[in-house]
View 1: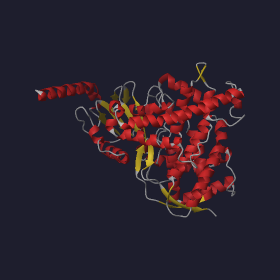
View 2: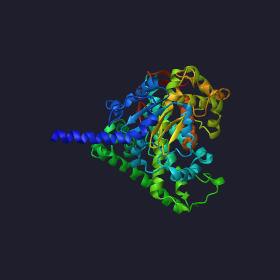
View 3: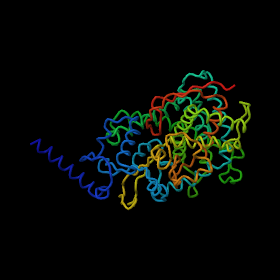
View 4: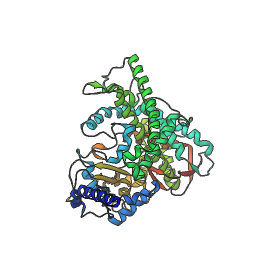
Length: 498
């Protein structure tokens, strides 16, 4: 009797699963991809997967099935694309701006900030946040970049013996100091006080969220909510939210005392005192009303998330590439000396950074090989035509940025580090502006890319002015921890420049 009941329940589950999949099967039957199983689809492929396996796993599937393949996640269709034409269709759309379901894991921390919001709410947020990246505000952040990169150099100096050093944690703390001071106008002294509760919480939450991405069963809210990880996540997020809330309240009171007008003229943006992104948010309105503390907190937390790990990855991998290519490094050093001079204590200016054209080419080539966000994803809110194939509403569309950047049909000899790819006279060789998208592209491109480029230039130029990178460790094992990461660190050797 019990056996009959079990079979009956199984039959019902299979029938429901089939009915939910049936509407989409007709769309995907011509697409290549691994064989799905009843109920679980292709989830069986992920059960023993570790974070460091994801990049290789996707490479294997791409090699086998081509530049567009499908997998079934339960009954839901998911596509993985390195097809520039299809990626352009999605990224350039003003309608297909909803992030995929996997981003929901960030909601407890980031709420409905710019990264996760959609539709009209996203357009409103994008509009009010654009002034935060006005060039006059960015120009004033140069002082912060220079100060914190100077601390980084001081911390690296005792390690400058030529022996291999894991530079990743050093860069990570410098990037955290920079984003805290520019986003919130406050210093957390991460480089000199790595045991602070806020710094530890940022690190711990990143690891927890990554585990949830990889562990398929934890992607089910019901199962995750029963786990110890859920309670741990709540504790960590409370530390982060309490910190940002305290800063917001303090900054709001300070602005009230100073009597700052909400209607500052654009010509005066950032000229009275150095503004943080938080100050811009405190003076912004939506439909004539000021932003609530929760709305401001969501955006500040989003800045913290998007502006910390990404720049850490970019700086660290660029240093690795420079250590491997001494001829590129020396050409860069020559450019820096010609612009800034030989005085190691001389601060760089906004104009100096703008003039570092070769450094910009190096950074772009580094971002091609090691994009901090190697995969981005959308959830279709309507049926979409991709090359004559209709993809149904509700499907997840994953864009393999790293795999696209290493496609030999787009970038010849793609594994070779060649900054000259981005020389002005060679940019026309790119077949599409959507072939190279380290900051995404289209309406949902990264709003902070100019900020990021200035931070990268300032930090990298400071390191190269002070140190000669002499050796590089082995190619790091790449892993996915929300962003691209070196699994066991990233090692280079360096000595002081004479």
